[in-house]
Length: 315
Image (cartoon, rainbow, N blue to C red):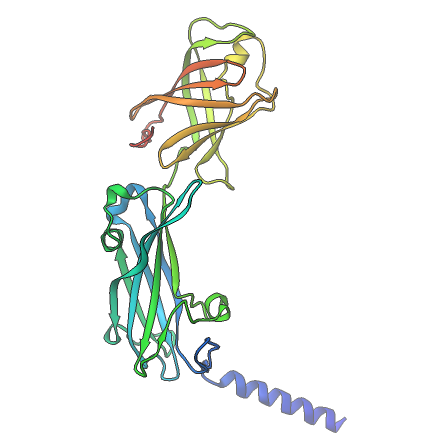
């Protein structure tokens, strides 16, 4: 019994001693070329997307922590490099330029102490306009779903360099290290079309029935969480079937917003597929012509809601 108590006491003492030690990370990092090295821990990803509709105010922004044997003091410079990437359907990825280019260099003096750890930290912002100019493009040449690949290169006082090409997957991907050295900044197109809208419809045609004149009603756009920019709509015929004696039932049709370009997809309960054309749009009225594969069609004017005009750029 005494031996058990003695062993338990030693264990508790060791735990107390270890818990009282300062937060120390031994930087024996498994790089491909170095045993003892440095890395840049990602503390905060303040902004890692560019808004297609507001490139002038978009930015790439991070807070980083330099971790090394001298609490960050071996860092001399950190290069921030960038290149532009676009997926060309049927072709593959296109890079501009072929190799990343320098957009900014952080100096040792940019790193400073902080109140949360003993390691030096730095925060920076790269405006979208600066990144676009660095890769030799203009804002007019940027498209939704483009990607800017930002790569960091840490140069230390021993003449060594650390980046995504010599860091191991453990350092790059493990939550503790959080040091990928590369950050992909996507050009996104925020979409906010969810809501219930009043509509009127005319010029309806079908071989299955008729509905002369104009009908009106409401339609609800419900955002599909798994597919940003996609909205399930209440009735793909906007009340046309109800008018001539059928019902929408279990149909599943959606409107898709891809950087302002609106399309319609999905099918009805008879498996007919749906598409649409945007006829015109202004702040108050979105006019579309829907069509299904059975030849049914109608001209629909969807009214915007008070205080929420249709976004500029819809087409």
